[in-house]
Length: 220
Image (cartoon, helix red, strand yellow):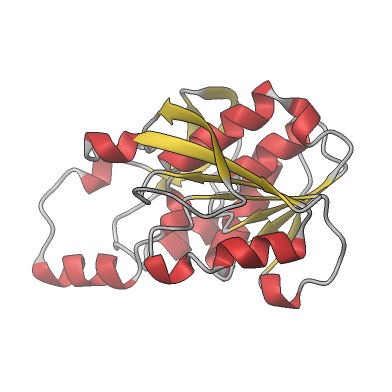
């Protein structure tokens, strides 16, 4: 039996004092297990103070968002996208897509996230799945060559849209998964698929957020 990482539980309790993580299998990627927030303690009314605390520290890394699950599945189903390549997972969160890239045969995978708790989550989820990841906190300071940059659910804020150009400055090929941007029109990015999914644990999100679009771009 794998012991629950104490450090991750402590991180999660910055969001909610009785929150805890548990090992969960992804329904659409059953070969991947992740340490994610246990839904049971979350199924109760929250006080106003608790709501404010959750808003201040929502612990995004403790959920596998629909876009991450879809992109991980896409990588596992199309291993030639990453096989033998150096890949960066930007906004890695739980590290689900980074883990999928290693499983699909990537030569090197860098999980990049500005949140140190997310990087800890990536590290622990890599251990849980018996893979190795490199960790990095700043895309702008990253100077190594990479073959592919992947990003899931990082466009939820319109202020992040200029990152699409940054991605292509950092890598010759990019794959983005997103369920938030309507009327996506950012050449040279083009749509390659549209897949229904959900967050794990399921947040019962609006149906419109359950449909994930995959986009690809290249500067070659």
